[in-house]
Image 1 (tube, rainbow, N blue to C red):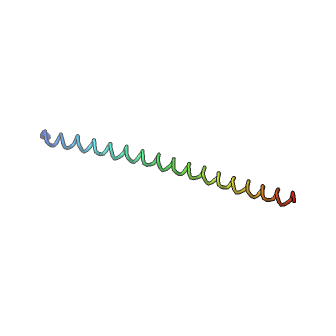
Image 2: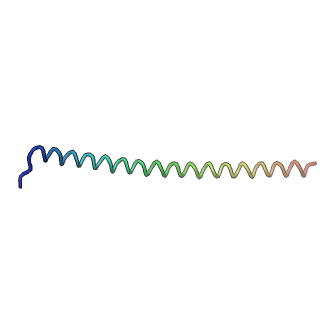
Image 3: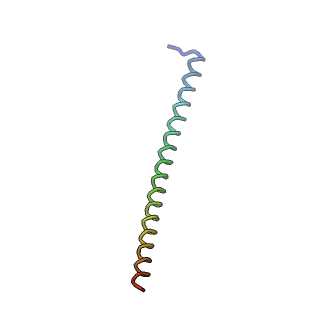
Length: 64
């Protein structure tokens, strides 16, 4: 069965769109992974800051 020019053009276009959707999905996955990593880093920073403040407060109280 021979495809018409229009059918070939449409098939090519469908493949292009599919490839773009796949690429977009991959980029989305990497963005989400990056956000997750940054969130964990921020969470650790906050935890460390809290510990520092508690330690400082204990030092000040014990010093008096």
